[in-house]
Length: 198
Ligand SMILES: CC(C)(COP(=O)(O)OP(=O)(O)OC[C@H]1O[C@@H](n2cnc3c(N)ncnc32)[C@H](O)[C@@H]1OP(=O)(O)O)[C@@H](O)C(=O)NCCC(=O)NCCS
Image (cartoon, rainbow, N blue to C red; front, side, top):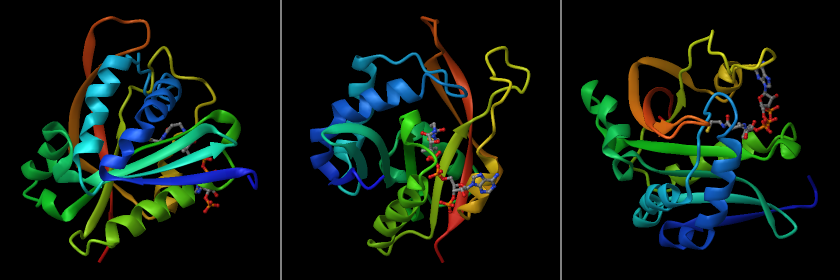
């Protein structure tokens, strides 16, 4: 852990690390439960949202010069409309919500306490604006009897509670991507977890 370095990017400067973020997403999100069949062209379009947001943030973890992890965040209002939709449906103001997007670490870098740093740095960034009273992230929901579910899989739910988040069964977005080995996109439910900043 002592050899790891951290870089921080804000707004349009995220452009400098989009390739690394795309690679890390495509590698880590191939795993259960995301099972994401990544595509570089799609990643480029998707990640452009991060560059267009003036308030976006990325913390990149490097081992030497090699990016081994990243976490990102941005105002919910700057995200894809599908991600905002459940908040509007629940009568909440998305303008008061800061969205924590991905947190990914290559397997060899897990279990060293970096997740706490991911949450703390993103929350500190959200707080700098003074406009937000909630932070949130979402997680894909898969059936427990899904054939690709590893027998030893430990859900992150207790970890997310440990970091102060609560699940909101009433806040569910639907987002499409192709599962590993599939060419066609299928829609997945993503349940939100929230933490109050006030
Ligand atoms: C999610 C991810 C970034 C977390 O990183 P990590 O290195 O595994 O997590 P850490 O070990 O740093 O942190 C785990 C924390 O949960 C705590 N924890 C672990 N098991 C727990 C349990 N059963 N109950 C409560 N807390 C628990 C740990 O003590 C630690 O907290 P601490 O730092 O306060 O002690 C990493 O596992 C990953 O990339 N996973 C694949 C992608 C993914 O699922 N991303 C999340 C959604 S985008």
